[in-house]
Length: 478
Image (cartoon, rainbow, N blue to C red):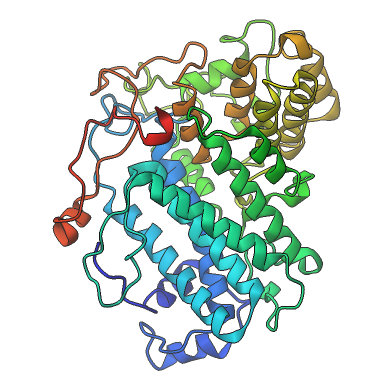
């Protein structure tokens, strides 16, 4: 991995974000040299880092959406749909640039004695590092930000995971402190800055939520500890209002950009038949999910129909008419102003349901229902429609009849377009009902990991691990 040059990110941020809230002499320095700022401030680093955590969520969500069959390409044999090799150098770089920025914030926070900025920096580094770890496995971290080492070693994938846990634990210690010499600047915090009275406390809850997610991800391994998962959850979100999301954009939410391009030019953003059928009562006869109309719009034929992954849009329209569903800018999830959601209360309730499943079915069932209800409320489903769905016998099975299949089924809907959905699909071995390999798949089984980027091979080839088949499971997936 080529060494990340410090402080070259600010011009890109300004061009992308157009932030008006960060009125700081840091930005004034851009008039002298718009591509280099020798002395960054905590406020500017916070704005940059909180923007990038949201944007990277979108970038990774875009990569994995066809793997979990949320989206489908309009063209047959598309690389993403069919598990072909794709060079994700740009995404890899974006993740490491984000960590480099947060690492600078962390160092400056330590120098200035700010426990709040240090804690937030640890959360942001941990999140971006986890994204790298989930896509590729082994990755540079222990030597990644040494300015004197242009070719850092790759740490083993389990070591990277452990380091993310360490970062979150450090964040929890720092964010629990109430005596920071420098408090978070709400105008620069694009995640929780709109609620300054609870800003630090919300970041603390987010750290616990991300820790619970990581602890739950190893459910296949002998190290899985549901008690530790539940302990983390007990300190995390208690309502949808706690959700971590980034909603500052130059023009609109990037998913809304996808929807706009589709509506104008019939490009990407088509929704998979798997997702649409799971919602409209085809996969699960007897129950139509009211979230369907909150996720997408009806086609020109006044119906809901998805695109088959790997097959492309159907004839006779075949990418020229709106006779299949696509991402909607009318959705509370993907509208112009909708936040990019990083971790939500609804997701955490499903983690709770899974953690309780083997020891307390009553609590597991209560968490399962609460997760559905929270997600429907987030999507502005009416109370009447929500309660009718929750009362449907296909959903309302009772504690004794609760299965992990039901938990994963509902969590699949609640994590729509979130990168975490691919982790769940792999942990669940892609056992969603009627979930099949895409048409024309390049692999004989479901995809489990990505090839290392070509940019890494050209810059740090001696340290990049040899590629293995994309069906090879990561350590936590075995």
